[in-house]
Amino acid sequence: MQINAYLNFDGTCEAAFRFYEKVLGGRLIGIETFRSAGVADFVPPGWEDKAMHTALVVGDQMLMGSDAPPGRFERPQGFSVSINVDTPEEAERIFGALSENGTVTMPLGETGWASRFGMLVDQFGTPWMINCQKGA
Image (cartoon, rainbow, N blue to C red; front, side):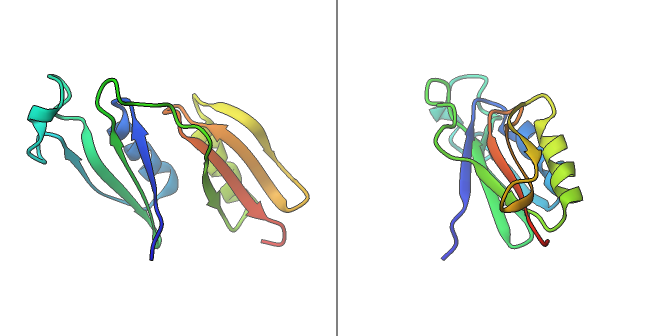
């Protein structure tokens, strides 16, 4: 069994996933649009080339997402995408990149359990937690 986060966007899925690919590394394994999936008739005009499905593979993990059609998007709440890294430097790099044009909700710093931990909402509205365990 594998459990993956599936993120929804309000028309910015492709931009978000290209940004995540750059920040997190990994490989974007495709962006299927409503048009390429053959379901363009089910979305409003101008929405045909938005992402119906995309996936980013990072190591043995996968982050997936799509654009919710107009009127169906809801801002993310009640969860965060959690990233655990091996070094404080990697935590700082990722936190800095993801927080660019976003909102830091807990600055990156040392905690009782981590050499670095911080929380943010990125420029696309996705909530993140970045963690580097002590002793890593």
